Length: 370
Figure 1: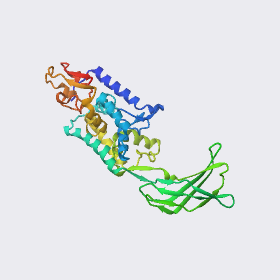
Figure 2: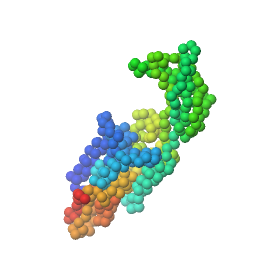
Figure 3: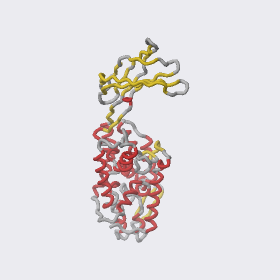
Figure 4: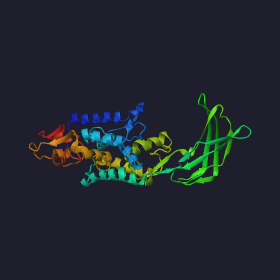
């Protein structure tokens, strides 16, 4: 049973977490900054999200073998200043955990070894597996610029070369020819063509049989493309963090199922590992009611990254050992069930200040500076 906190402080933390959650979801009003990473754990796939999720950006960067400088830089910059204080005051998913844990039910304590799960998730699901498995690309047909020659009866003889850039064969190649008016850029003609008998293997380049279209080059521009040119990237084995993330399931997959017909080809679409994702979400939601911040302690890679910067942060908590009377009230108040006198200000401490407010000797301080 956690120690009771002063009502003012409880309201203060609730207010800061609520305001942060609101600011990180301003896209509900049309204010979007998806090129900027959010400091708290907030899924960029959510229709309301203001910014991008740094974990999603880093995972995607790992999968395509690039270094996501902006995402990594933003996490390191925030961590160097605030450390894991973000988890206590600015994280929407942390806010949800605190709210659900207030539901009156029997409570349990989690084993200490649970804390290592988030570091495993960070290493394995954000860096290692995405890097080595990459994305599976399907349906990606590259269409070269068409070669045209005049034909009889006012037609054009069109020759098109295509390349399968995906990882799977494409059967039944489809092309669409458009004439775009030079003056007003409107389409004046569209013709679809399907080569049902043709299959193209991954990496293969093939020149398709010539076909005829009306000659309108005097007034319009000819464009030939394919509906099979859309890149569909699927994480191999569905084992990247974003495909398992309960926050993404709650704020992206479920809303997209009702607003966009299941999300179409979205990364969070209602397909593939959806039942596994829903199971993970339900387990964590139930866990939030009966245990304090289980997601933070077990599975949050962003918390793990901030934990790695906690010792260097400009603000952190500290115990004045000379004032401590070993009453244990700080341990009872800690939402992460830490041994406060030994672990305060460390990798697991979210700098929430709950321990500070219950200390009868005012022996716990919040420090600022190098």
